[in-house]
Length: 521
Image 1: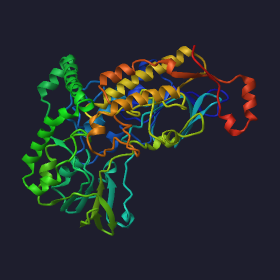
Image 2: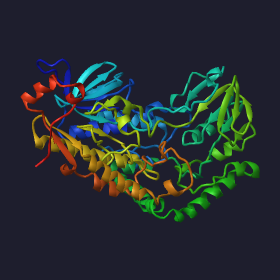
Image 3: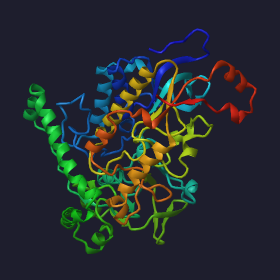
Image 4: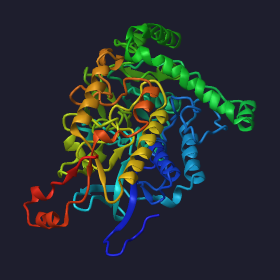
């Protein structure tokens, strides 16, 4: 566990993990399995769960089957539905924290304000809301779906009603009988709309771009199935394997042959035609881009809800707020009592990146000003002993992110082994050439994917129109790429000799940030 060494100003740990969602808890479990117990998990909230703690809006559920959207090392035979809701997933994460004895390592209400690399002592100085500590290694597992994104709408501050984001749902506000506007048509919005439609007086959906919506094959998992999974654990593994295999076979269509998605497109159009009989409404809801370009959404209730008489679809984005009147880009005016933003998160501009200060004094945000990039989706040049779980180009468009997280945990485990083998006070920092080479290969593969060629503008793309979010391959390929750390892709950093260290203290500030780099033999 963490300790206060003699003469040290702050508590020191081997590893500091930021966040306690799937990535953070997974990292904690893996560290324990590697025999590393000197670590802390820094959580800004008062409970574990990450995005599955924060997103408690009505209808919130996962769009990946439960047996695949869970850790392979912590199978749950008692999932109640094929696609479980937020509450059950959050309960699962609480259970993981308990059974793997992670809670003693967690520091709740400890939001990271800044993590700064100390090039002289070769450790991170981590300032949190509950105090300061130092760590040899920092693992950022905040995830891309942690900080809500609300568009800058002129006049929003003049709105006299209630305003909140889907990830910060106000459960004390009663929607019954209210005139409610939902802004956005992403994965959250298509769950919120049918969940609140029956209780509100009137619901207006502001839609910039219609999503492709496929039927959701959701059902209760029977008692017999759950009994079987408990008695014969290999059946749970088999179920997970089948779900994984089906999605691996689909990857080629997304990454190499988008034209093969035509059949899926026809199924989605049939789904729309069955639920929406009004030709004018159906036209508003029909996408004009290739399916898969944006994340394919799953719902059996979204279209039927939009067809109800108390629902209006404004096929235009919200442009301005005038008092309690919302004005769309096409001039449509709507008076409402409440605004719910389902406008996603800071994915390509994660706020945590502005709080990580590397060896040269730049923040990770500054380093990524031309686009996020990291070696094997994990480590960034200029940031020694720093790793990101769910880093650049590790997202998926058709499968479970838990598969990618577990691959990155393999990489983390070997990273820690390499540090142990090198011995002493040591750090690894990825070579700029290795990061650039990896990123170039990823972006070259990205050119033919549906996410780049499908004709849409999605949250996968950054401000420069570059896809820095999605992995352009199978989860098997990514697991192979992250199985081991290639030390040749890194520079080994050790403390400067004592006489040079003393000279640094009298050198100019910029010189003081330089470091002695010794390549691995």
